[in-house]
Image 1 (cartoon, rainbow, N blue to C red):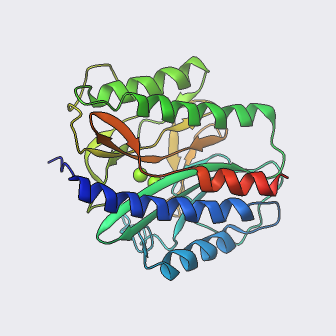
Image 2: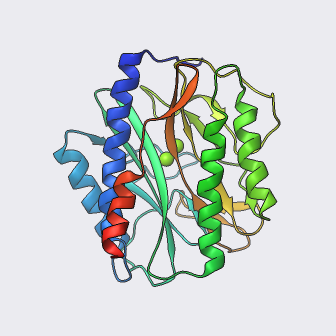
Length: 266
Ligand code: MG
Ligand code: MG
């Protein structure tokens, strides 16, 4: 069942999404060589709780006998695609880290992600990050009433594959609302005109996960981390988007991140 949201609900969801955006802005100001993912996680949890939110991933039930997720952020480094558990191993110059964060506030979820460079990174890795972010926005452009989920999926896949990258199949975007994961699924691959029709009031978390090499992934034995099978890096960007007046309205924002990065790199 796909839950369509009222304008009031969409405003509450914008509030939750922007709390995640502000959290990621704080992370942006602290990502550098030598910092530990656990330190970033602590900053995020403190900020969210201080602002009356609940970290949505902490305690999330693991499937297949995995433990509950132990942290506020998923921090996935280099060949890790998503669902990485923050550790106390310091970040190293040249790493990339995909940071995914979920918040529940006023009964509604925000869920949003960004891939950061740690210091200087190789140009080919920067290109992977750039193309993954572009593919997110190309997907969002398709989020128009009357289009179908497959139109979003196709736009993302086309751009990633045109650049020679692998599109992860096992993990998908999703509806978002009073639940962290709602129908419909939003695959990052697919055919135009396929899948459920897009309607006014739909809110989707669109989240391309794009591999520099092949699309195949595997689980690490921590029960959570997904990594590329070929060991090449992967990037992940996610926005929360509503259909308002027939058109996409992005509820989350990268402005906080961009402002923080501009200061760090000044
Ligand atoms: Mg997410
Ligand atoms: Mg998500």
